[in-house]
Image (cartoon, rainbow, N blue to C red; front, side, top):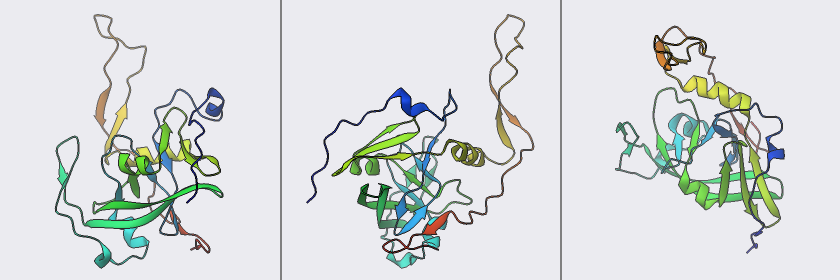
Amino acid sequence: MATIDKEPLSFSDSELAGLELPQDDPLVISPIIANFVIARMLVDTGSLADILYLQAYDRLGLPRKHLKPVSTPLTGFTSHSVYPTGIAELDLTVGEALRSVTVRASFTVVDIADPSYNVLIGRPLLNALRAVVSLIHLKMNFSTSRGIGEVIGDQKKARVYYQLSIPRGMSLKEPPRQKRDREGRPPVMKLNQEETSRENDSREGEIEKKGEPHKDL
């Protein structure tokens, strides 16, 4: 069994180079799941579940009969519940070349219309990976037997995906900073109803099979 490197997992200001700051962008990465590179995986440190959306599961070419049944619903912070399609036990790999880690993941497969992401990983997988996430750096570090591995998010793509996650016809607009009310207070950010453009979400090429031992589509 390989010995995991015990070098401290840390981040520095030098790793902020190339990012547009200040930022509040999500961390979106592209791991390997079941020998496919999966784009649009959201790292959500507040989630108690690891989610694989049914559309992405189907594109992996895996039979639905292999899903393990589950009867417990998922409940979000709005108290809205969704009943999963099942549980998928799949290998997930993060990192590059020798500094990578593979773990067996139990994904809760959920069927929703037009998901903005293919996969969402939460605390269970982050703990299994022994990963440390820095949202200000848009980066995830983890220990391997050959030193510290890292995964860096794509800030530009993360912003596009976030916009796609906003419901159609809704957008967050911040009023001009120079306007104030009669008492001199700055305006409150409002949620406006308006026509918004939504980028074509064909997802073509977002799930790419890798060549042996990971194969390419």
